[in-house]
Length: 338
Image 1 (cartoon, helix red, strand yellow):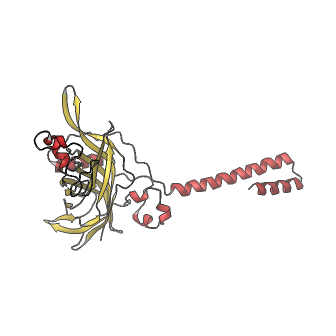
Image 2 (spheres, helix red, strand yellow):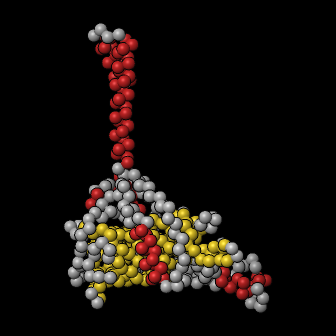
Image 3 (cartoon, rainbow, N blue to C red):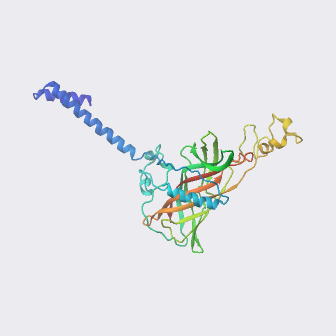
């Protein structure tokens, strides 16, 4: 670009323009070209940049209900009210995502996001059809804590911050659709249906859990996918760690030491052993969770549905040595009827 400016300056002087005036004109032209090139790069980069989720002033402060199904329905209504379902400004549809190459997706965060559905149609699934390519993307997390105020304590869900990198979205989930009593029933069969995730409380405590929809059997409130359609059911949450995991003292569920070798006096079986029983005897805890979903977008031409979800489950027990915390997850989902 510098050589181009020198040639243009020589030409301007040759045709009779003053050197100062010609220099100003050339500098202005070069500046205009640089701005045009810069704006082109910015436009191409922003096309694939992950959007920043909208800030919500409403907190996830809700009291726990003994019935987890009721909790899911109340939280789902709250998710719709605060606009969790609103698609980000730069959200892409499934067809647009499929057109991108690996290099266009790499490093942008798009692989951790669910596709957007455009339309408010309706789809009545037929016998033998399946829900495929289901994507479940968490947007907000809350952990149940005991909050003390005025000498009294009560349990509330406290906003938490995700510490896991962008690998917490579930993808490729599929399963058959059946009809039971005139209602749609979706049964999850396979896919990437779990993701180890860690969130951090305002005080700094970190809570690991296995975000999952394993063995989900979601029953709907009708026989047609349309805006306002709801379905929900229980899920199975396996242990955050497997039996081959060894703790810092080499103890594990199926391998390793059966006690802390450095503390034999506290594990004689006569005195003090009860305090370390949970640490020494590792267990693979399987707990129950629940997922509630509500459809708010349907594209009949592409056979796509999208909406919001609320999931409630228990966190990690550290293989039986800790009391698990209750975790509330809110977000969006996408699926295709096929």
